[in-house]
Length: 191
Image (tube, rainbow, N blue to C red):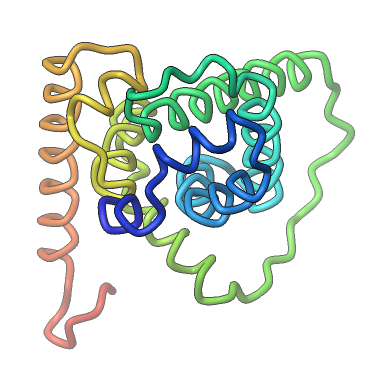
């Protein structure tokens, strides 16, 4: 987030981290960790998957921290790594599940979700009709408050392509919210 960026000064922290200041690494994790976790929660099936993806992202950031170029915005660099981790995870799990055999379907018992997870589920539900790339740019722009240029850099797309994805996503969200409003009864709740 822009406010978070000014409070944490991510670029300065990253420069210190590259120079070997591991206190700066801790500060980076505290500043950007929750934001990256929300990014994964909105796109993964479970909290444990999001936790694993976040952990893998920090390991990868640590391994490739020398590739960050001082003076470049660090937030798109973080999101590009997070995006690659998510893609790699998806490919890995797709290969694994393609080789698995189903024994039998077991009904799942659902438990009441804590409020933070419920909010993540609400966001997931709202963003469900969007394609993966549309969901990704909406999360980066609206949750992470990244600029068009930062999202383009993080997704390896042109700014025009990002604008097009955002426009399509907004249209789908408007249509979905309009349909939800029309289904509401006089009590103001969905039937």
